Structure formats: C-alpha cells, structure tokens
Length: 370
Image 1 (tube, rainbow, N blue to C red):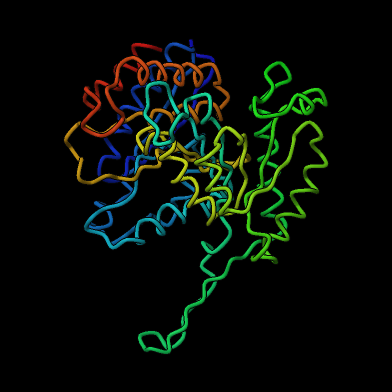
Image 2 (cartoon, one colour; image 1 turned 45 degrees about the horizontal axis):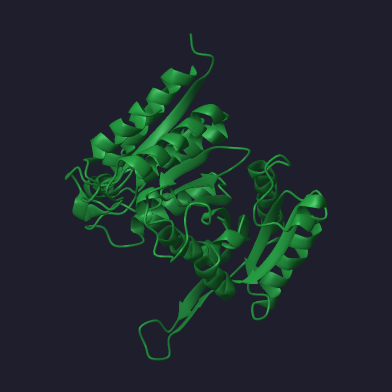
C-alpha cells in the first residue's frame, strides 16, 4: 500500500513534447513503484493543435483547474503553424502569472560523459543553480506604442519591479543555497576562511547596478537586507555582462545565481549550452506555496516530431525536480543518479538522433538503472 498519492496535471504540448513527456511519466511511475508512492495523472490538450482547431489558447478556468493538482508536468509549447508569441504568452506566461509561479529554477549541471564547449571543464566545474524571478520585469507587458507603422513610431516596454517581488525571489535563492549544502559538505568554491567561519554556500546577485540604477538599486538593497538573515551564506555580485563572461571562464565560481526575469531568460540559455545543450536542461516554474510546473527547456523541436530520436533526459530530469519539490527526495535523487549513469556509460551523444538509442530506449535505460 503506497504511503502517498500525488495528483499530476500533464500538459504534453506541441511537437516532440508528447514524446518526452511519455518517457518522463514512464520513469516517474517506475520511481513511484520503487519508492512506495502513487501518481495519478490527468492529461490536458492545451497547445498548438487545440488552438488551430478551436481558436482558444486556454480554457477560462485553466488556472483554477490546475490548482486542484499537486504539480504540473509540461512537455513543450510552440507550433510552426501558430504565430510566435500566441502560445508562449497565452499559455506559458499566463499560467506563470495566474498561478504566481514567481521563481524559475534552473539547475545547471554537466552530467558525466556529456561534452561541453568549455575547454578543460568537467562535471565538477559545472554544477550550480540559477534562480530567475519569473513574473516581473518587462514581461509584465507595461508599455505601448505611438504612431505605429510610421517612421516616427515609438515603442516602450518597461522594466517594473516591486520590493515584494524582489524580496521573495532573493529569499528563495538564499533558502536554495542552504538546501543545496550542509556543513558536512561545504561548497567547493568557498575559501578555507569562509568554511572556517561557518559559511556553507554562496549566493551571487546578477544585475546591472551601474546603468539600470533604479531597478537594480532596489535589487541590491534588498539583497543585502535578506543576506543579513543568512550569516552562513557568502554573498557576491556580478554585472550581467560579467556573469556571462564568468559562466564561460570560471563556472565553478557559481553556486546559486539570483537575477531578474529578462537577465535570467538570457543567461540560462547560455548556461544550457555549457552543460552540453538543451537535451539535459530541465527547469521548474515554482510557487513554493502553490502549484509548480516542471518542464524541459529545449522547446517543442518540431522538426524531430514523431521520429523517436529526441533526447528525453531533460524531461526526465524535470520529473526528478518535481518529485524533489513534492518531498520525494530519495526518488528524485535516484532518477538523477540514473541519468548520470546513462550519460556516462550508455549514450554516444545527447544530441537528437545521435544518442545511439531511440527516445523510448533512453527512457528504458533510466528505468533499468533506477
């Protein structure tokens, strides 16, 4: 008899989304059986095909429907026959805002056997987390245009943040830093002096305080205010341009990076390439007090649809993140270890069509090695 049952809303989405979601659910169900809990899932057809057939992006009660679930497992959104922005804003952004998923959490982890474009860097060097604020910034849609279609057209889209938004995001980052490390396993990037002083982790604020002085003046002040509540965590600051440089030159310097919505959107794709590409990059849209949504970040990859060659490991990793946030930490860790085993010992590559295995066979390998 299982100890716990979790209700999962599954959004397979577009393109290769249904293929990777199928493998993610295969692994999740195997982990549930092995670790003594149950998953009940319902599938929703929200995506490009539904929009083309009905003209509706989401049902009016979509957010209220998802609030009845413990978590959301998303495949991908994006359809070649739908104008860019319609599905992304109408589904992804709307759900993030309506469910107040104010954190986008992106582990940046190079698995064994996965090739990185960074010379002389390995799994021990690329292992950090980006905490991206997920509901503010220019994504709020505050702005507009004047004299549209003329040579005098003016377009404005404003970067807007409140103290409330910034504070809860930064506090989440410090809590995440504590969660990642203990005094028995101090963060390798800290100096002996830091470790001796009892510091176990580091949070780096990524901003642009020298130019965007109003917005990142707020971020910087709040960062130091919150840091005072976490004497065991070391702090650092990097301008966003310098952050991009150090992510390439010295990724081992980072532990937890916290940043704004726009900057986070950009640097997490850079980070994904340093960890070997989109094939292993998972992410979570987190509401710590509500319903969170977990997804591979690589998009729908429509050119590979139905070929059985897409890499499902990012979706499987997103499933592991979901279990971790649901409290099934042993199961989540087992999936992570199995992914690492498969990349290190089985796959020829993590690129679509070059793995040496089909999409479903990769899912089977993860299950076999749980």
